[in-house]
Length: 205
Ligand SMILES: C[S@@+](CC[C@H](N)C(=O)[O-])C[C@H]1O[C@@H](n2cnc3c(N)ncnc32)[C@H](O)[C@@H]1O
Figure 1 (spheres, helix red, strand yellow):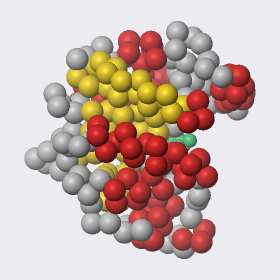
Figure 2 (cartoon, rainbow, N blue to C red; figure 1 turned 180 degrees about the vertical axis):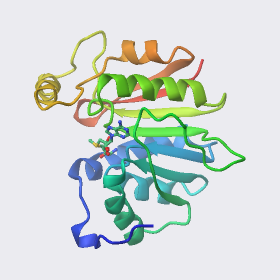
Figure 3 (cartoon, helix red, strand yellow; figure 1 turned 135 degrees about the vertical axis):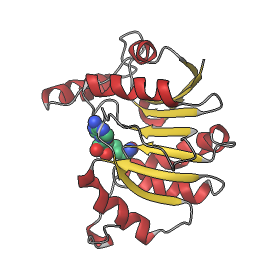
């Protein structure tokens, strides 16, 4: 584990602090019967340490691009729990899809605030990969801002999308295109969350 970064220098996200309780309330039910969850784009690592602590029946695996690992590891070191696995390197699209170990597959996936940051082809690859690898009883919980039938649910979201595009990010994705990219999955729940975000829950159709 890369432990080089002192916790005082670890990245901090105020939105993570604001949204983690509301997200946990949903994950508690959705992930009730799961055992191996992969978080795609762990970011600072704040969500990971909080969710792992409150979902002790499962193992929480962090994943992100390597430049995020030192920060995630600093959070794990500060808030250790036995059921958290330090970040693996994941840059979608990735040819070799990760597994928790040689015998198991991930039965749950979580990803927050990644789809509007990734480029369109990356989100397409993310949805394809989960479509391919999610087992029958698995769940994919996807949190963030999205459009529905091309419509933004607030002016602030429309403005943020525009600023993302201007800064080279992929911008908001629409629920209909996500569904098209994951034809074997069903969007079983779409829940309104604070700050005009959504929680999407995908299961095998
Ligand atoms: C806005 S941050 C969100 C971090 C965290 N999940 C949260 O809610 O605060 C976006 C994350 O997506 C990750 N990301 C962007 N493109 C990616 C890609 N192609 N593959 C994997 N992760 C990616 C970034 O590295 C970053 O951690």
